[in-house]
Image (cartoon, rainbow, N blue to C red; front, side, top):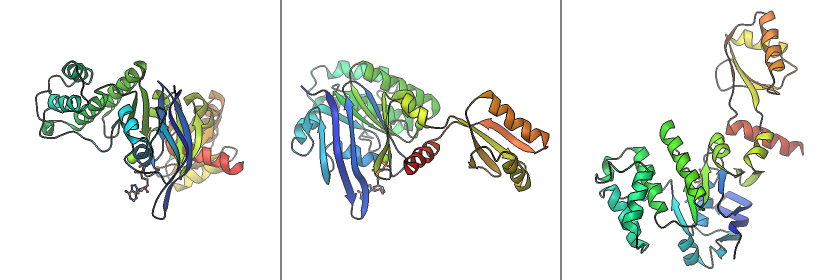
Length: 310
Ligand SMILES: Nc1ncnc2c1ncn2[C@@H]1O[C@H](COP(=O)(O)OP(=O)(O)O)[C@@H](O)[C@H]1O
Ligand SMILES: [Mg+2]
């Protein structure tokens, strides 16, 4: 019996001269939620396509449920389900019919019962008999994932399951993903959102420029990512320059708004107060002063910085 649901070793893949994956390795234990975090174009979908036997790797070995994706693609396909960026829903059919067809393809004896349960879980019961062409983006995404859950594959791939969803549907999706794992399913998801990976995943790997730059639990990753960033927006260029001089002891970098600084602190109240005092005493004009949620870019900056520093 295999203990790792997914085992990827030294995976490489290029599209012509574009070396998207350069020796990527990770393992996913059974029954866990695993997040592959990376910005747009990092190679997340490429990894999922290779694991789902839709694309051949250039090198390395990939085992899903103990089976090799290149040598035993049929066995791998029997063990997985796939959903996400390449939605498979049929527009002309209703939600219920879409689920029924999957049940039929997978020879599920209780397809009707499973279909009803999934419609309910994904809040699609009232829309079940309307054609999918009338569904909203969130409803389509939910149906797509419901379809992937027909037959309860031991391993489920979710490619950016919450992209394009509003906050309410995003939360609903998080709950569904958690209930999948609670039922023993191994969930492999990709995301561009740090908070999503932190909230959901037992284990996170960060893919950047073709390699895994971080690998650990959400707690372990959090320790490496700056938490105490304060973002301050100043009245104008002159005020910003004054602040830079007053706060020269703090590491800071230009924020994504006009005349804005992201200042790194230890997250404690003393440093908050100190920064505010210095600026107030010199009458520096501020427009905004707020703690900042670290973004994936912040995480990259820190993680890559660490790498370079050795
Ligand atoms: N079929 C393809 N042919 C050529 N280049 C591709 C193909 N698919 C993806 N790429 C390129 O590979 C890189 C990774 O793409 P992808 O795996 O889709 O990233 P992600 O899912 O993380 O956004 C991108 O630079 C993309 O342009
Ligand atoms: Mg993608």
